[in-house]
Image (cartoon, rainbow, N blue to C red; front, side, top):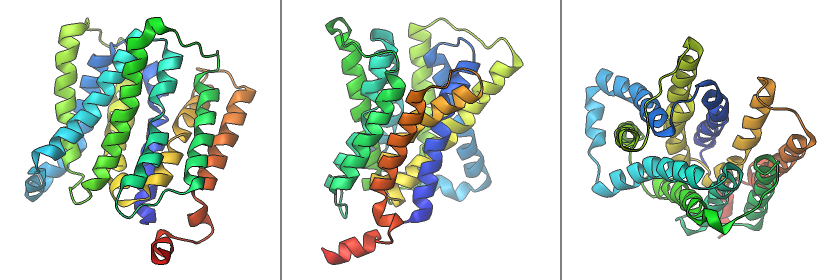
Length: 296
């Protein structure tokens, strides 16, 4: 296992925990408009790198399947997520969509060189319990009237987990291609915005700063870090650790006054932390992936 790559992948989870805060502070901009702007901003660091090092442009020449997976992953996830929120209550839609960490952990057994163990699955399930405590704080009531929204949320979970797992299969592909994924997602989001939404611009400087923060971190640098992490790090550990995002997000909202502290948050932290520690037992106790493979 590349521990440095796993840490880089985990930095994406930390950045995603800022998503709710920045979104709440960004005003009332429609989701596809916000997505178009943020992904355009998120592509800028990659564009700067390519401008300073033109030789890296050659790394963008990849098979069509790489581009299909990348664009379908980033744009498909956000399109399905917004569709879910438009057609189902946010609590239920968010809970279903956040099955993707569990799907990553379970699906990792299909990857070459990976071996799914009981503590990976149990760790993911503990993380899921923590997420349920956070997301479903006001209760969950599934209604067949929201079938379209539930279906979109489930497709959302499968889309992101599939993107992450398939990215692992393309481990030789440079992370530079994420710049192209972000640009394509920005353009497609703009098309959806123009066809489905009314344009609303931020009204204050603080709202513009929140939009900039979204584009630079959770809807920008996070995707570069995640791509590198899932390609070179411990994807099972990253899958379990992903459940920390909603918990950290809620803690940050509490810290900045957008939410109230409660026993649910404390218990959710316990579940997520316990799940992560359990899934990382090989790392914690010094039994690395190399030893596991050598014993097979």
